[in-house]
Length: 624
Ligand SMILES: Cc1ncc(C[n+]2csc(CCOP(=O)(O)OP(=O)(O)O)c2C)c(N)n1
Ligand SMILES: CC(=O)[C@@H](O)[C@H](O)COP(=O)(O)O
Ligand SMILES: [Mg+2]
Image (cartoon, rainbow, N blue to C red; front, side, top):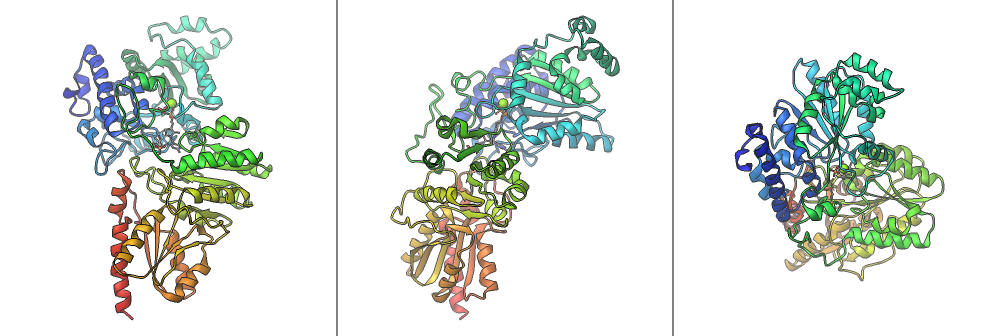
């Protein structure tokens, strides 16, 4: 069947039996492909029928399907002619793991971060009406993503609509890990309500079963003239806001899903279609361990085991262990995650210090202000958060934390290039957005031992402080370089003259490569580990100015507002006699792919940096 799907809407040519066959083929295809490339398997297996139903009931690309997060859009990609793309899924130059408008006109909106789909959908609805156009808009949001504040802001805003807007709540009762919070509990109650048993039941029959609320329901039904109102009883939270609730609909029953979409399309206003799906559906290991198969590397299909065995600790592992050790000795330390307990390494903390562990849901902005409140109350909060997700909380960092100089520790994970998730997830802005904030201290460790030392320093520090470290294996060389972390002081590694290399955090590994290659070619070269991005170690810069000609900064952050620009600004303002060469990422978004490839493409790999240094240094010497 899959062979017959060459482009969008081809699915409509299949009969029901063929559609069943197709759903099986899609699952087998996804399992096989993702077992080789890695990707977000469990969420995708859960929405096969839901996606098929939407593709059967709507016309693409005219109608707009907006995926929240977008990690579950693989079936949508398959049904819109992108089957071949799965061979290079998430590889450099290959197909993205998320919806991309530049990839297909059937992708209505780019996503990657959660809880945006209702806002974007509402924007489309209003644009449609302003321009007098006629198409359907369907936002598909997961129960986990419904813990994000933006989703409620959008629901609140959408409640006034008088035209159709379909919001699909894809409820698999899971975020990456177990979902949290009051809405999740509410949805759990709705799950046990009667299934969507069809639209044939008479309105009155149903209403007779609803004592007390019957009259108001009848009134509403008369207002909307929609028989579907018989199903309002379970979703009064949404109903009372002015959003029609339909469901719960069994999310693996294609005919019922299609019917539900048909009815949802009739409602003149916002309608929330509550669909119950199973994460990992159809693949035993993913059904059993949806968390493990949420995002997974290549794995063995028979056993479900991940193929590449991890031999060394990642920075995340180091953080997870050290923060537990710190908390064991300091009862004031609390840890916060925004739905990323495993990803940030806080799972261990959750087990060890249940009362001091807080999963706030996918709510980074709230998480930051909540941390500020904890800090104001005398607790020492450590918010472990991915660099790109912390972008969500910029005002909260300024307004609620830094302005009051509150001692909140930001453990900024996935800083720098993250690789296969691509543009939306690269942690390449944090040095810029954090180091521009007054009171903020920003550090980055060169290796795993320094991460531990910096975390201890950060917890002891009386003010807002960020420690940023990358995804992946923690660097475990240069153990002998472990001088105590001193506020605002960098670390001299090798001192020579002429060329000085000043590297930030994990780019130390590249900087060592640069340093070695310059040495091999006969250059005299100093190597310094910056440690602090803010405050900048200006004494070190002045000291380097005495016997060097070229100062090279290396960071995995955009150039704009980054470490190199801070150094440049200081050198120029204080007229330090140094030429400065900044190795940083260009003013652009970096797509998905292997990190080494991305570094090469963006010119921050050791070889490209060494070449640029030699070229620049030659010019500097010639100009004297
Ligand atoms: C702002 C933001 N924070 C965190 C994440 C990481 N994240 C990706 S998917 C996900 C869980 C989403 O759960 P749900 O919406 O229920 O989708 P499911 O995976 O269950 O299909 C999380 C926390 C993100 N993408 N965006
Ligand atoms: C879709 C999403 O945002 C997460 O699942 C993310 O892909 C996790 O990234 P890590 O694999 O780096 O934890
Ligand atoms: Mg979910």
